[in-house]
View 1 (spheres, one colour):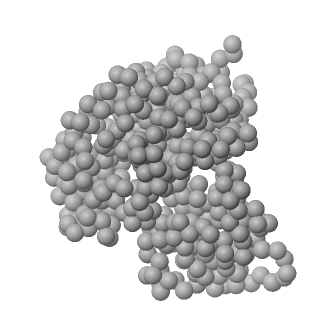
View 2: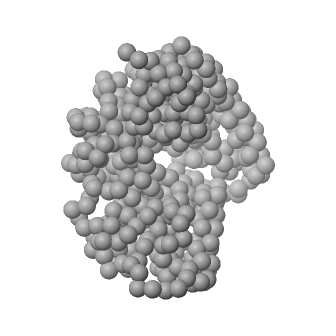
View 3: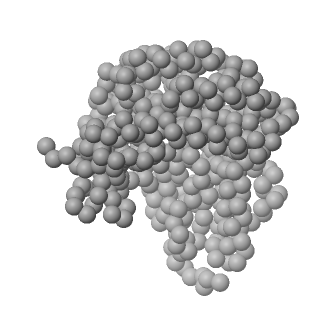
Length: 438
């Protein structure tokens, strides 16, 4: 057991889940540091006496990871090695009452929009002047920019509205101010994130204003790449495609989660779009932006998904040849519309269907990467790992997409810089090349 002294408090903020949670944690840390607290993020050191866990409650695996992490630190607290344990985020928002009963070691639970209440536990003030000045826990040359909170969609499988509430857009002026601050600190790439990007502006401007926001962000000196994540396909603002095509700073990259391709499944999912409309949107996007990198996610094992419906999805993935694809297995979530239906696709079938889609995508990814051999790509370098400098092209987002590797034995590039790389070899998900000196 630690010997308690009058040493100043030290806080360790632990982040679980998605990039939106990461931004929330960065804001927590920024506010606490602004109130003179010593704060670290995801530290493995054992010298912090206060732990804040920012949880995820999206699907079963994420919920279990969050619960396991809370229980781990509850044991640490019982051993007397920490003084306070606080929990915030999606899991806490959704299951607070049950968790309070099950894990009494936690000193306080907070929802997704309760940062001021969390700060009050530290006798800390919420400093409005720190908005836009948040800490960056990623590599210093890229950052996530959360442009809105919540979601107004009614997808029958999704619990996000239960945890994050209705859609609330941030004003363009606020986002430009934050982005300019990030640029002054060396950020070159901004990844725009939200539960639903394309809904942006409807609540405060009464029309979809993502194109106008992108134009404003592109004017910021120092920002070289703007990347779009989580664009809902239904009622997609086609003017956005024109901005992507025309604006050099906006990456020719679009993350559009489609979830399925069978009209009967799409209807049960309440996705508000048909397979035919989806194909038309994809074709329009590729026609307007010929070198577009299109990323999507699919959901398998939704209640009632038949072999025929899954086969339709398999064929769709083969036909559309997405540049990037991820697959989720359906998770039966309380209080969603789909929870009233039997979770009737066995776990092993969900797993097999997910594996089949990823096998198809692996072949597509390898073929698309082979087409890049001999091409010269502009690459932003994120880190040095072993004998390689590791970076990303315009078509790649951190952690989820392909990487470009350059040998560090006979070449040099500064981390956070761009360089032109001629691709020489490829695998399914990595590209190897040499820096081209002008």
